[in-house]
Length: 148
Figure 1: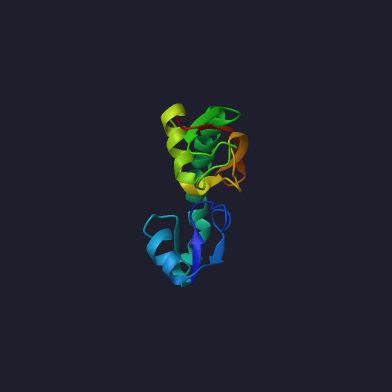
Figure 2: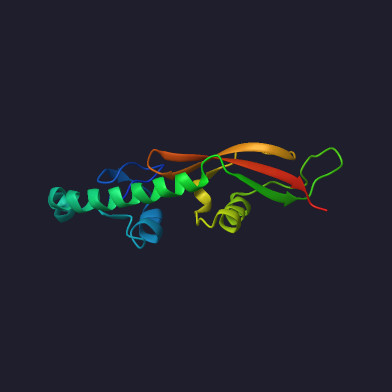
């Protein structure tokens, strides 16, 4: 299905782009959350007039992302997790745990899909990237400590 993005999306494109996505993703997520509209004939013709509105929303989102970046960038967040004697984690660290820790310590609400964890298998200090919006990202120092 072809859609018109109403706001920038990390994996799809910038606001105003016409992209193809799977039907279910468009119908169940992008369109109901007003992140996109169907790219039919009428919407394509009115795209030029909507671009000013899309750009205004985009600028607002970018300023919000910059505010969040200033709060998060280079901060240290600690998470207690279970590990063995050698410091290897018993399970995987997931993005939801990180977003909850950020919300608790820094009072910033993030979606878990914006967290780029990579593969973290042991205790210690790790740098993680957080994609906030479009090309705006922050670096967070994540410190994993053993749960007692």
